[in-house]
Image (cartoon, rainbow, N blue to C red):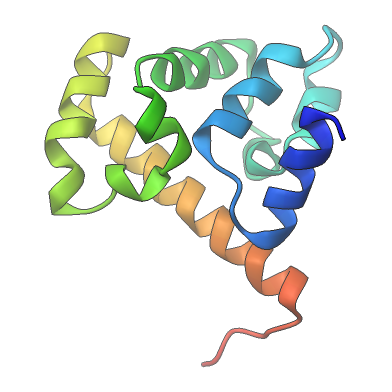
Length: 124
């Protein structure tokens, strides 16, 4: 079984992590950005605004994370993740709010994929 298969299985279980996302960014073939966006679920929501510099921004942020943070995205969430977000932001040359927004969006995507694959609908 390939790493891509493992990544796809984790995505379908809602367990896709930052490490999987970083690996996708590193292995994408060069081509039109619209194709890149279609290949990575997390980026689809950025389709209208996505630019090459945003992919670089995502990569810098992910590469500033430690191995544990890449495996366990929840460590970056909420008040308990503030120091980690500050450290990642400083290492990546960006603001903590950017890292927080990225984290929130990633977790939202993870939750949405998990619900879709489990056939659950969001309760209102």
